[in-house]
Image (cartoon, rainbow, N blue to C red; front, side, top):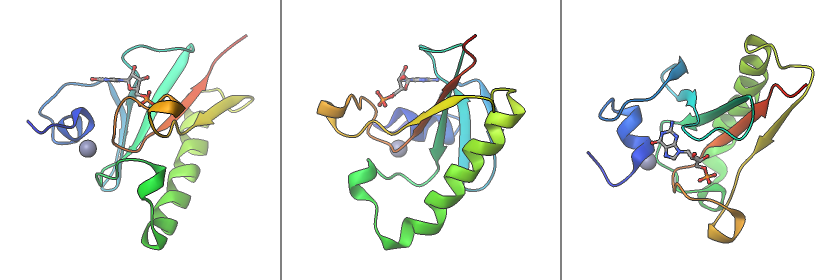
Length: 107
Ligand code: 5GP
Ligand code: ZN
């Protein structure tokens, strides 16, 4: 176990309801969903937040947005969804491992 819950999920040391995984990303259901579909898209590299991104992350972050589009379609919510990066405590970030919220499924 590490001191990062998302690293523990990535390393299979903590359980999660995983809907997608490849060598760079893991996608799992938010444990406390605030939408009918609420997934967390998580780069496997431990980057604490948007504020820690550098030029070397440009390609990976583009891939993350394209993955969000793909997962939204797979989840049947491509008609409308929200993507959010909470950043810093004052921005509502509670887990210090960068993640993209994908929320949708409202009627
Ligand atoms: P943040 O507020 O940092 O942007 O979002 C963290 C999100 O992670 C929250 O929506 C919270 O419900 C979710 N979360 C926190 N701990 C866990 C966990 O152990 N498992 C899962 N699946 N989600 C978690
Ligand atoms: Zn981490």
